[in-house]
Image 1 (tube, rainbow, N blue to C red):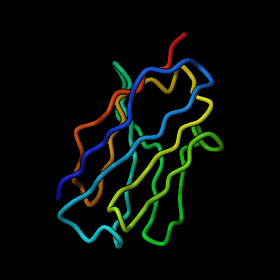
Image 2 (cartoon, one colour):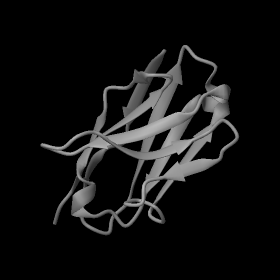
Image 3 (tube, rainbow, N blue to C red):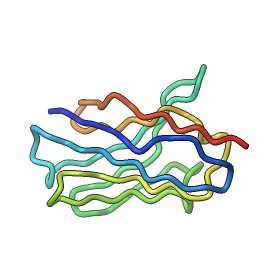
Image 4 (cartoon, rainbow, N blue to C red):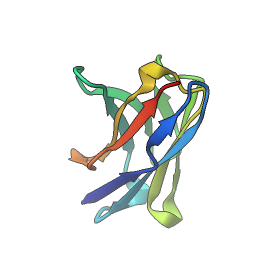
Length: 110
């Protein structure tokens, strides 16, 4: 199983980004895709997940600002991030079934 996260970048506070996670080697439509992040000097933390039935879950810190989704036809999951804050700065990872992508850096700064 391989996961490729992309879409990171630098934005100002209040801005938006959409991360993508392309998955190969698994039955994507049956997989739960998890999003985690790791800020400098901190432990990796859960951000969001999207289940095979499109049900989603979020950490309290991003609820109402981030939206997880998926496109089974493209074997790709997404994390739409709105109203970004400096504390959202981190490397973002996607994972499924204990497989992890390489991460994509999100920097929120004025």
